[in-house]
Length: 93
Image 1: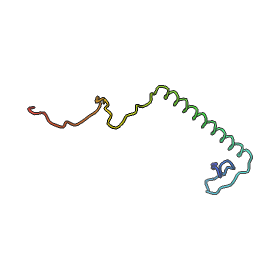
Image 2: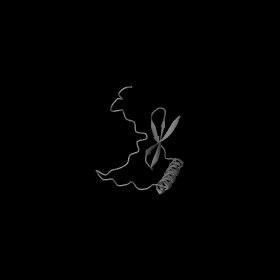
Image 3: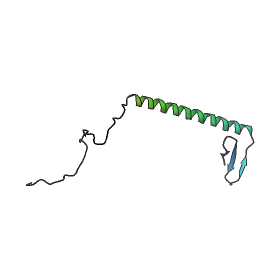
Image 4: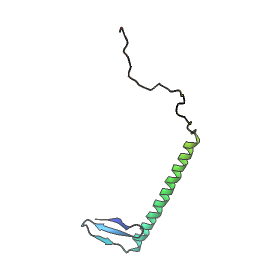
């Protein structure tokens, strides 16, 4: 059994068998296959980037810019889900 591993990027493929020795391939079909795989990988990367850009554009169109706060500015806080421990215990319970 053998597997194909890239020997040097975009140049040639090296066939490595289970015995551990490698043999460079000079078969034109392997070079063509490697080139086709590289082209397909470039197309997939471009498609993923395009999809990510479209998702970012859709997400960003509903976003508003964050307000600019200054040190010492007074703001309202929503304490609905803010958990604290009581600072004192009730007397007479």
